[in-house]
Image: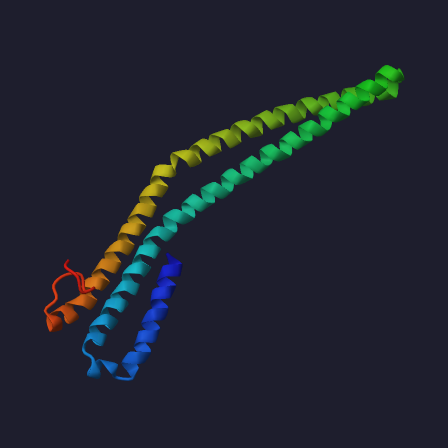
Length: 181
């Protein structure tokens, strides 16, 4: 939205430079086109502003969801670490029956259990967050549809405004592009 608005604003500024040279005196259609461009920029800005807050809300929810997915990745990595360590220590205990190694194995088995619970919990939270994001899809589609409709209306209004002057002078009826409307 901002990109299109910026492009239209740049076009309006360039057109304003032509208006400052009083080109509208030589060609009355220029004033009509300038008004159409100004209206287009205003309507595009309004459409962008209307979509900004709801899109910001969606972005915050997606960021939160991504953080939860990262927590799952981190929890799984920790679980894998302890899983590998327990396997290694179990092999060592089988080779050397040492009370210190047995104690270390038991501590790591406990940490593995804690990591397993944390991983499952994080996975459940991420799953719920992903479902909530998925449920917001219709809302996001509605926001995008409303924004696109506002852009279409803005362009149509600009075309009508810029074509109204030229159709009066040329006898053309329609879209302002020389063809039938």
